[in-house]
Length: 450
Ligand code: S3P
Image 1 (cartoon, rainbow, N blue to C red):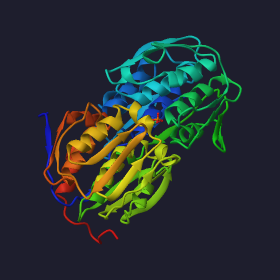
Image 2: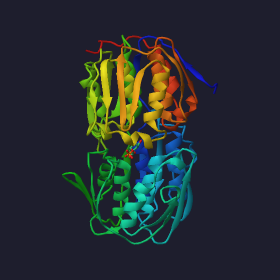
Image 3: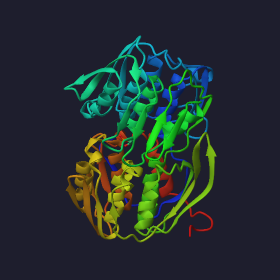
């Protein structure tokens, strides 16, 4: 791919598309299918770099792809832009020892050790790319050790991470940061621990693991801010449906909101309320043309259509409970804030510094390079809206969400944006450029969005 990639302002975005399958749910589907007894059909597994790493990891510990999915490549999809897999699990206690390459996948790095730590017969190492080697694992290692696990990490906090299986006991763990990855890791460990482990969340975070484990037969319940899991003999997921990824849809939700004349319909998107905080934030900013329709539950997750048109935006305050519910969309909130009138303040989001890049730094640098008035703070950003962005050049720093942020900024800017290392988008959204292009040539939809 030519580097850099140029994104010019095209005018209104119009059309219909189904964003790729949900990355968070796909990671969990592969891992929970691997823990399962018997075969699990995963319908709509994300075919992207991160989730290929997870599929390879579960195969390394002994899970198998069976039936047609054993010979098909992931790219042979079911027509929904995602693959249909049949995974034969190894059972909750049957993981084989292995050296696991997690690639760029932080979710794999944090969740899988939870399952492995409680299997006394094995030893595993998890390592990945240059970016993953900077991402903390002490957040999972220390509570797992409290449960009796044996883990070792570089400098006690960075990958490679070594896990030696042991007998675990349940603890009550208060998460120091609101992290669905840490919560999920401890719930996986709890399946193999004696007693009833409890995870206390400072704020609600995405609950895909709880939903999927419950659907597979685990006893998992919420008591206020606490998730309680009972040890299990076996899991039988059977069938897992993966909706389109709200976090991928979010790029077009924000694009349609900030580019005048836009009207975009996004099909069959996951609408789990622990993921859709961006919609609440945009509505507070004045985005009046966001319609949700045809919501139905499939496999425990709400799925529906999102239709978005342009609105004039006002700055707003973002913090507290907003943050975990929109953690991966906060870069897009900052972009929208550049197009708003007045000041937007994002607080309580220091976790952004621990993502695929330091997203407080990379978002601030990117938007400033395009003419935005953005100041980084320790735990967020302050953005002075000027109604638009001039354009310029953005380096993705190998972070998929920064690459796509640059592309959307280009489509909405006055002069266009060049993105260096646009290829990083393939971590979660391999067809992103094609999908953006299709919306830039789309004819008007019937019955304009109200
Ligand atoms: C994820 C949870 C979030 C999110 C990440 C995926 C998950 O991380 O940023 O992209 O799948 O559980 P934290 O829970 O650590 O904030």
